Image (cartoon, rainbow, N blue to C red; front, side, top):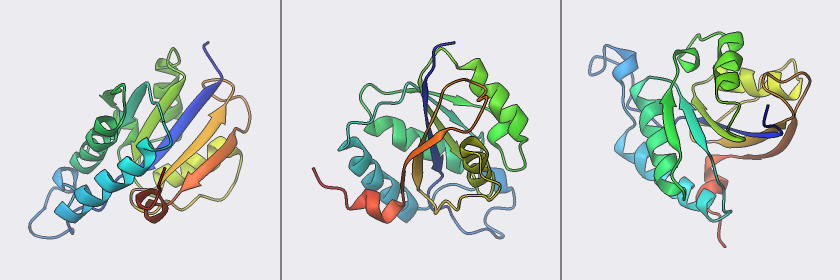
Length: 168
């Protein structure tokens, strides 16, 4: 395959509160504040000249919206692909299979939910303990193959507050 790969794991931004207004959690969107914070974070990310070839996203509304904000901040703009495996309670083996389908691309964004995104990050770096992602956090993990044959390298991890404060 193409390798090595840069995987960018991103937790969705701040969403509307659960409750009567959103009885179907899959349709719960980002809040106005959540969208504004993600846009500001992505401006910080754009300052480090990040390039992503494709973004795989959970099919839920809040992750799709996050993916669109991420894509809009990048040049060139990556394609967004919704994959069921990134929905809450998706199996990591299915996520890895979906990653393998996109192995022709070497820089892949992955937008998901906690605890799944933190568990995936841990698996990719060979840890038994999930890595906690704040809403809007992003990390880069480099792997040699898809699916990874061994632990990858955590290159960086940026919490949302730091992203929003990045200056050139």
